[in-house]
Length: 492
Image 1 (cartoon, helix red, strand yellow):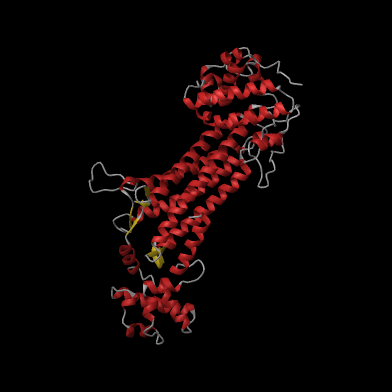
Image 2 (image 1 turned 90 degrees about the vertical axis):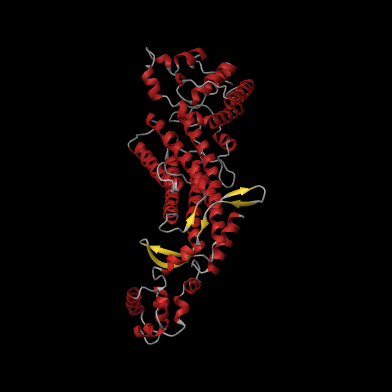
């Protein structure tokens, strides 16, 4: 039989006293406490998830005979009007109503009367907010996955255009060995690929239904939680509903928010590493690249300046996101079961992490890959590569020294002895202020008699690049194979 909740306050009580629990209390909440405890002005972004969860809950209550069909229809009608009001900006969000849930419930009750009061049967704000945040975050993870794909596509495009461009590869920020600039870009593709995989894994654990756990102990009503899970798309890869199995854990768990913020932090670390290289490469001391003017700013006093503000700010925002991760972990570390008001503090860092990551990925995809010109159908802008500057830098650092050592090993010399021999050759080249490839053959033979004229092929930057033709190596043939793999994976 449909039931009503006799202890639920009337709409007037809910609207004027501002609490769904006010009958127990002898004095109203102070205005200071209202402001301190209210979350409505930041959690109102959960409204779509809140309405979706409420509609699924109402459908289940009606199917189980807990509320009447007419109440169900009234709830649907009221929620449709509330949706229209929020979308048009006409909905009045009230501080007195504390959070997104009570604001929507109060308006629903105003619109449809007792049916609105019956909606809360079998649930609590504890399981309601846990469901809302999971639903909202699931959608944001899907958007982030799309943005990660866009950034990977942009990086793959840059790599494909610069397979033959030689960049000095660095270790300890010292010239180490020549690499393909395309190969270097693909290193970031691998990082962002892992980020996308982590996000997909976080999504799987986020997409689990707490609703029906009520305040902490479950409920006496005959709920069909699996029906709700199906309606909300909280299902596994086989389409089976996925429901939190312990009511205490369901209402108090925020692992999914922490795990998301950890994945977001690592993604931002990768963005920060790329930012650092872009900043270095576009400085006058390097001059390896240019980025489009729309991603730079000038100086208020030095008219010659073009400052890489976007990469610099992304590097700074990484600390902001990592800080949110530390905040969420600290938030949870001392909480006993089950729900505590502390958990209201999970939303602002989570929301800001999502916003920061989405904005950063969106702007980096355009900054790296350029913007589509509708007239030509081609991307314009993005990173402009100065290939001669990169190659000249590679020539300055004896980048082919390891190749000379490998050459001697193939002549039968143990690698450690070859390493020592090449160190002497580098010292001689330094003394003569020339590259190893510029040392006369007679001088090179003075370091080892088995060095022959063919050594100059391995001492060239191009020869060094081509020689590293193993899986994962920087040889152009390998880089092109990796580009094809990523293009197939990303379906571009």
